[in-house]
Image 1 (cartoon, rainbow, N blue to C red):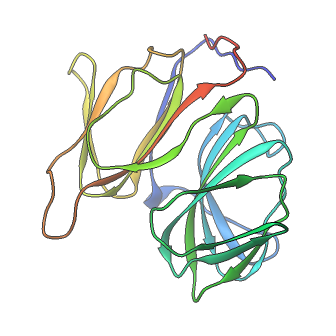
Image 2 (cartoon, rainbow, N blue to C red):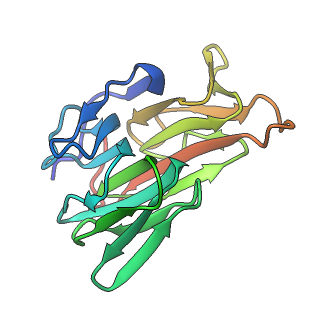
Length: 213
């Protein structure tokens, strides 16, 4: 697997204007938020982040050699079943990890479910899907992803010359040699009557030992 690149990549997105692709079986749709390498198909990606809207029960696609992490963003959730395990995905913002090799069936727990998905090619990338509420620095990871869930978040580059405020459903992903992408994300306000700030945070590192340059 080739994990090298000659350029640093940083892409901003907004869920409101991110295209949605309907599933062939009519059971839902997917918004692809990040993919590495850019433009890779479902057989060639090294890591991928997406948001799924599930309208009907049905089986998950099997992805041999992929480690998966899923998290409920909204809706009533799913009851996941696979030979040897089952899990109720009914608690918002609580990640659950499983193998893409597993045959998984998703039963609806009510109405539509909106789910956040992280997929990593096993032996190439590793990292955890987390929800955080405090400052986060970009400099330590070769690649990663963030998306505001609640409250406003401000991104500042290392020099302080570029900044951007992220609101709910907005974020960015980056890729480059570890340490090449510098900056910090901070909540604009520590909290409010509506709740504490929350951010999806994924920091990725190579598990293969190959240099990323």
